[in-house]
Image (cartoon, rainbow, N blue to C red; front, side, top):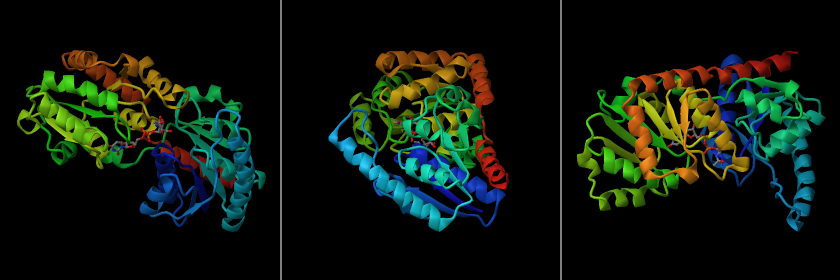
Length: 370
Ligand SMILES: CC(=O)N[C@H]1[C@@H](OP(=O)(O)OP(=O)(O)OC[C@H]2O[C@@H](n3ccc(=O)[nH]c3=O)[C@H](O)[C@@H]2O)O[C@H](CO)[C@@H](O)[C@@H]1O
């Protein structure tokens, strides 16, 4: 099978495309893949590193108000549609799959006009603008949340698959995770992470959490600060008179390359509400305290988080209401009540869709064969 995948800008659009490609490769060995992105997007770095072929087109996002830039963008969009058409024509894919971000607009549109089967995958409860426009043209829309269907003009095309997650998220075991991260089996592990770039408000609130829990015999904290905040947070913890190395229960990292192992070891997470992070958390059935990033497009992270809250899997704290004290109390209450933690974990697990990538791959194969 020959497959074009397109999606880009942020990791949240790129990693799902990679996971879907790997799931298709397992079901249809020998398949050939081509990724289409832009030179400026993160995909230009990630896709070749992951061992896939990438070709780029020139395309820009529309600004949300009328401007001369938009006029220029419209002309460029016609150009990118032409470039996309040439790529599709020469690769001759059996199917084209888009995972969001404006680059997939012209690619999916060109393929659909050429009557090649198309799927878009939408990760969030509130769909992105590109996917909303493409909904009219594509054959199927694989949605990460059932709640997203009503936001599309063609809900009849949606298939609720869940969001694709890396297989390592499910294969990692708790004991492997504890050993790999140097954690204690007898303590409750709280994993704190703010999405792929960290979260300053969470990092700041964590200072009070350290004041309260440093040296605690019951819980241990694994905190991922994001690259840019790491040095300043470590400095502030020191200023507060807390010695991380002597605390016996604090591990701080700028980034985790082994997130699946950390998730396997976690008894509670404090997270932003990016769709893939939440898909991983629910696939593992981990209870969560969620602090959605307030500037995500159309506040979509809060909508993602509220689905977990509504189902009893998470407690949501709005970023504007986050204080150190509130975070300390929320963690302390949960840790003091193992029953509640267990019930939230079970509710989280019920929302998980670990088979999402396989289901999307099967959907693609079925479309090709139909
Ligand atoms: C700011 C913003 O608009 N973010 C969007 C972006 O999320 P963004 O890419 O930030 O976040 P996601 O939660 O979707 O994915 C993060 C991924 O990075 C991994 N990870 C993270 C930290 C770390 O130290 N190590 C690590 O491996 C996680 O395990 C996960 O696989 O795309 C998502 C999917 O469209 C959206 O829901 C998010 O709202």
